[in-house]
Length: 220
Image (cartoon, rainbow, N blue to C red; front, side, top):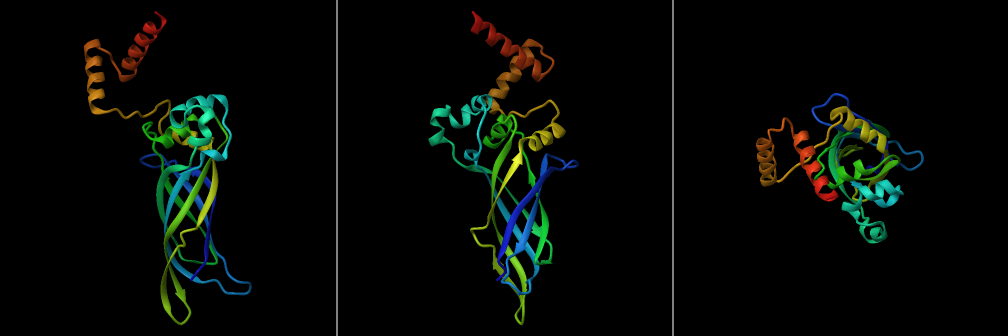
């Protein structure tokens, strides 16, 4: 059975897609004994769970404030800062022998009801610590036995530090000066009714009106 290892080498935004997409370049290598011939690999149907590991970086005071709703106050972070799921993705790796590269397409949401989006948006700079957990099926040629099938071992993983600027550039490309906020339907209906009664021209103007009123009450 081929002993495959995986590395995440780079990431870049996809410039032409229906929705925000990052492409991660994977290095796939078969580990072989010295002098052994590499195994002919017909394909690898690869699945990947991607986790955010927030404990692997430091945070500026402004970032800590924006992360309050995720992790609480900094004095509690020893108990609250834990790895959490970002997303899952998959790719079919082309035939190779020895080593190859593949592109893992990862759709990215800008929905602020998701913890991953709020985490990414809170960062002022630096890098986002990610862990890629691999699984899947290997189709390979075994001498004298023809086509064989094996599973990617459960312990295959790779770490990658995604620059915060890369994620920010992706969102600026697809949603320039914008953001998505999902509301419960009854809350949206109340907001829509408020907009109609006030004769407000846009959702931005509606929220500005509400925020202004809230600010006036806070001052008084």
